[in-house]
Image (cartoon, rainbow, N blue to C red; front, side, top):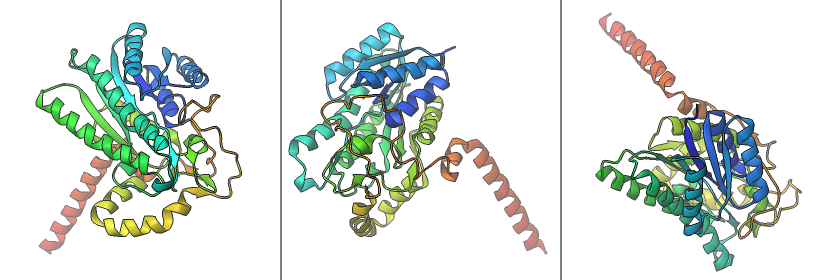
Length: 331
């Protein structure tokens, strides 16, 4: 039996593609909203291979009416939407002052208004039923901006504030709809091969780099058990806490390290056509070109996926420690 109907924006490649596969493996029927038909067809084939119903709808998430029409089609063909995952993104790499204003605004439109449009479309259908769950794919960069990605960082910061406002409104209205944010680390996806880049060398995610499947499993866990916010990966935790308690140090550290950290001079792979305005042809799957640098499960990602066990072990350790201290004091 199906867990329900899920929509994943940007589900044709990268993290979105990994999320689509993971949700289908956990018995969700999945609709994919993205622009490229070949990627959509591949994602639908992945869903169907796992025994679930899939639907691909070619959609530019920056187009509010197109997103609303896509949601109508999903409900007409698959049924009521239970889960909506906002993930679609595009990228522009380069210093702000030398970035074409149209490129900056296009990236922001997809990365911010794409989430706004998806959230609106989901709430329009979930609110009358007073049920449903929206997951915003966030980033460590929602908490700390870095050089060379001003548009993306601005969008992620904006999504955080937008989501907090909507969450407060739903709470005020005593709604049963859940909204979760899952903040991601750097991942090995095709994003870094089709961003519009001014960099002299091949763009790369800032190490440490995670495989998208690790992050997709966390998203599917949150879909099963909603949580307001989840930080994925040690680097994400370090970035968020570092900016809270040592923002000045982070300014200097990133100014010195983030230029070289976002480039891979050893990668001689040619860049693909940018997907900023039009989809890049082909079906590119979930992984990028950094399999040699990317890692799988870490202690932190394992721990956030197994909280009850971690809490039980911690409670047990605390009890043993307390007993030991009490015994020592009685001597």
